[in-house]
Length: 366
Image (cartoon, rainbow, N blue to C red; front, side):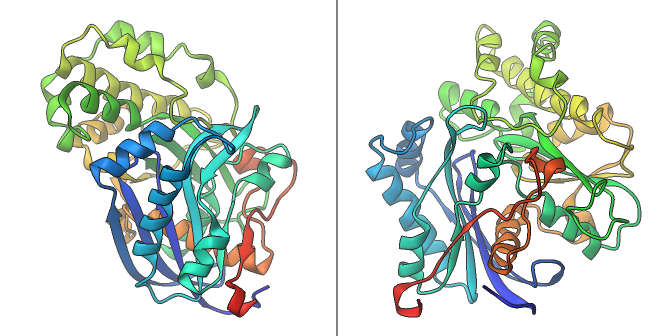
């Protein structure tokens, strides 16, 4: 177990958008951010994306040899050049059913530790689920440290727009993330995943770059209203979603022209955030947005129009919106190695604060 003190930690994140592996180094003791190091990105090739798409929804025991090779090789390639004492390895989420079969992140952290020759913390979600939590989202403890780092003095929100949207409400006046009243976190609903899936299926494009297609379309109000009647939006948080939980969204826009379909899906993603904000304990002073969705100006405009607070990319306060989740798993790796909690009742619904993760050391260092 690590003792107190600042460590150089690297984190890796491969999200549900299946675009590639983000890696980032931070300096931290697992409680505060002392500095930021280098970052990197290893894109999946189209062939690799096809392998991973075919593996979505699969569980351990099913045939995943090729998909695991893709995940392991990409992470080794991305992480090997980084100068870090310890690595946080999230793996590739293939399935997530916290109230059913659990959660499945593909990737072997013990094997990665051997390949990298340094300790790796992985399997961050299983302990939380065993104790009754949703296993997600896990970035909120890092968001709390980010709010402290930027000197925030009033409640604010961090919104990540990846394949799924997730929101962290933070009261930075509290002393620690696990203190009651410090955090509330949950998945808001689908974000980029359905937009990306429609773009890929209809046009062979990975995403609606710069919101160009949505900009030309008209939102189908009836489809949007039906979407907002989904029972998920009326459940109290914490709560979480699988990437394909709202698969019927695509069915609702199937008959629409391409631009209208993408505009409607983009409006659905924004409306899901609007509904989520209704659960915040107090209105946030501002909403800071990370993830690929912040690059979509149409989505950002829809959020700004729907919400009563300023909506800004996290870059406006000095953070890196492409690397925030990779940094989060570097931060969590140090917390796990120090035996500190990584989730609590207000972030995942777990029964008590829990330190979730497995620490694997390379054999030569064991």
